[in-house]
Image (cartoon, rainbow, N blue to C red):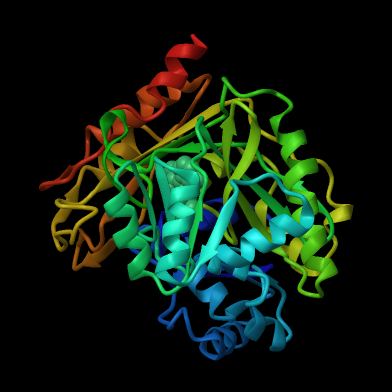
Length: 418
Ligand code: AMP
Ligand code: GLY
């Protein structure tokens, strides 16, 4: 099978790595890709937001499956354009991707499907905003309705900060604060059958002990030894299947990756948000544990034949990923710095630890930083403690001027599991 992956982050490197290990994949292409993906896939230049351009590239390459990684192309309708060209595509239509693209739409779908989530108001006027903030009280949760690359959500005890953010949004969702640990659960679906993957947890804050500003994600681990063993089954029955059924009922079936961001509250599981694509950095650890070859699974989603796919197989190992970020991330990051130590990891730590590239590019013989999150160092081990140790041993070999990483990824879960 000839596969084309769209995107350029560590998530796409993780997807390409798994696809490159799949014996059914005969040719692997990625656009635009990065320096690490170039080692496993042929790179192509494309405007990932331009559906016609992506479809033309896929046609020229003879791709038999296109996998769209990030949300922006999905919300822009890239999957629709690929399907219109007659090529199977993993990823939801523009209409179905509104589950991620509009918080208000997601709330409406959840209400119709009876999916447990935070109580909320959608507000467009200052008066509505004040009433909603007053109704819930602190801590305030204020969400820009549209896609905001992780910057649209403000959670604050301060009324004035909450009001300012709400007033700056055209349409805003104000909701009840959900207490409790967060879990990311992914499911592959064809619009009817829903196949959940294994849960993971990510670390959104920049600094140790969940301090500092929000980021795109500084690390992740899977499995979650502290979680109820019935969690996946429960979320499938109460969240994932009803949501997929509701979107099909509306005539806009969701196929691709449905990502439920969940809070495990004292009153039960609640949806914090839906995403319409694999999450980053959780994908890095979930795919590290998946034994089932990836291409057939994604193709079955694209073709509507997931009911025929045998139960997924998982490695009996834990996985941890640690993100190495640029100087000043999540502010405007410094880029263009050379990255050293990658060869040492390949020589000393592989195959249990390996580096997935996010913002990197080649500059002659060197690999240099090209974004905020630069590398996602991933490792597997018999348990979380072993996986952590391998991940951090590899991280220590990386030399990137001014770079930063969290030192406590999976630390608490590993300690509790001992
Ligand atoms: P989102 O973009 O919806 O994932 O929100 C970003 C982050 O804000 C989440 O991962 C949570 O940590 C936090 N958050 C969002 N909604 C709530 C809520 N209702 N209660 C508490 N925290 C929330
Ligand atoms: N891990 C958070 C995200 O992908 O949105």
